Image 1 (cartoon, rainbow, N blue to C red):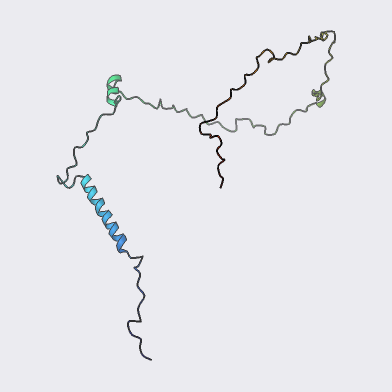
Image 2 (tube, rainbow, N blue to C red; image 1 turned 180 degrees about the horizontal axis):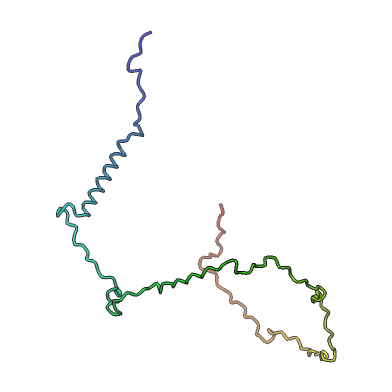
Length: 178
C-alpha cells in the first residue's frame, strides 16, 4: 500500500483558544494607564501641561457661626449635658445580729365562706306597676286618595320624521357580502 498524498491528509482547522489571556491583559493595561493619567491630571502633578481652569473658592456656610454666638452670648463654656449627678453617701453597715429575723412562712387567716356574698347569675326581673304606664293610643290614619303624579302633564311630543341621510341611495342594490 502506498502512502497517501499529502494533499489528501489535511488537518482540521484550528479554532482560536478562548482562554487566551492576551485580550483581557491588553484591556486591563489600557484601563490602568487611563486611571493613572487621569489621577495625575486631577492632582495637578503635570504642572502647567494641562490647564484645568480656576478652582472654586470655599464659601461660608449660611447661618450663625459658633464664633458669632460666643461673641453675642459670652465666651464661657456651658455644660450642655447638665449637672453631674451627686454621689449618695454609702449607708453604714448594719450588724446582722441586731436585725430581727424575717418571717418567711406566714399562715393566712381562715376565711368563713358562708359570710361571703353569693352573686346571682340570673337576677329576677323587677315588678313593674302597670298604673304608672299610660295606655297606648290608637291613632287612625285618614284615608288618602291615590293620585297619579303624571296626570296633569301634557302628552309626550311625537318625534319629527327625519329625512334619509345623504349617503343612502334609493333603489340601490344591497352590498355584496363575500
